[in-house]
Length: 460
Ligand code: NDP
Ligand code: 2IT
Image 1 (cartoon, rainbow, N blue to C red):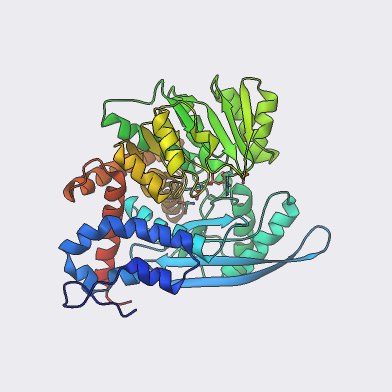
Image 2: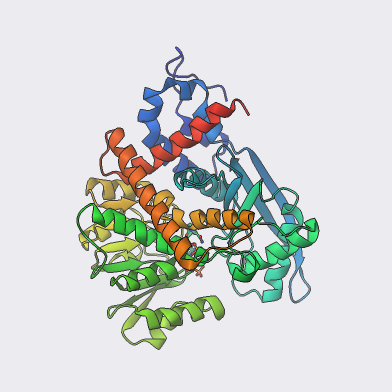
């Protein structure tokens, strides 16, 4: 990339234009790059060395992309072909680390956005992890256990040669949970003849960490509590909107209920439920069985509990009805771009003054602008949902030491990490003249840590 460089007598080419020009179809990646680069402009302007070393250009180019074919046979004996990917984005701070997503929408642009976010998120965790992301366009919905096992085995029969406990350590994300990590680990162990901590999110009795399943959701709630504390507020008694009904949503709701908040919504890709009476621990127990064991739809919640109504997704409706209820706090925990500008305005109009992002990039850029204009407590995903990968880092530590910590020990470390991330964001935002802006704080603090390591390590 031969862009002119400000501060060296050349002209300044916007890095986003370069990225768009190179890979015009990768919309989500453009969105993620645009968001980070906008925040770090003051850092680039005050430290010309970063532009001289082409740090922006280097950051947006993955260190390595692995793309492969996964042929497999379904239960009827038909041959199916899916795509597998692993983006090894940046290893300045440690081995590549990040989840695997199995969802029909998966493509290079989505995984590059997720890997890019992961680099800065992992930098914020205080643990030594680089950033990566991978997955497949395989759709797990309606597939049998055996079909899921075969796709996992097919995926790992290629990926095993590229990863390792000191090289690249994948984990779960959308569509990849405990079951899939088990099948992936089994295949890796067979092919390598090695029992190592090459994946996180493992089963408790074979190398997993306590609190890893809970970590993203709990962490997002801990981050919210830290944000509230800056305004002398607490979660107790707050009405909360939670979207999604998978791993992150379930444990977000669990911790909110434990802290005395009232959770009134959940969703999946077919629609959302609103339970005016509140989702209590018992009802959440029903959701866990429904989603994790029976792999059913959230609409069943409204069939089971008469206090709830289900609203189906309406493709003609540009807004998401889940964000149109009176509430204090919102925890988007399903997927990217689930809050557009109108949804953000609806949240504000309904009294929401805190948004903690359990999902990656759930808010679209003009939605974020609305949050910032109204000066609400807005915790961006790379800070608020960093608890998941943090406990993955703790799982790696425990694997290396060949011992396991108690639930309390891991949870205490998670709390401390979320508190530290919060403090880091507040301080970086203040230092660069954006007090209270967690988006700027997270992007700047993550960026500086990664790029200073890149400078130290030379042109590699
Ligand atoms: P799960 O697969 O467990 O759950 C995903 C949930 O989101 C499901 O309810 C799913 O509904 C819904 N969903 C997925 N895609 C869409 C879509 N296109 N439109 C509407 N709803 C959708 O995944 P997780 O809970 O692990 O992940 C949720 C989010 O959190 C993702 O953004 C992920 O990247 C992020 N995250 C996850 C971490 C983790 O440790 N697991 C860590 C940090 C962030 P349905 O069942 O109908 O598909
Ligand atoms: O987006 C994320 O941070 C994750 N899906 C978790 C990654 C991990 O390595 O635990």
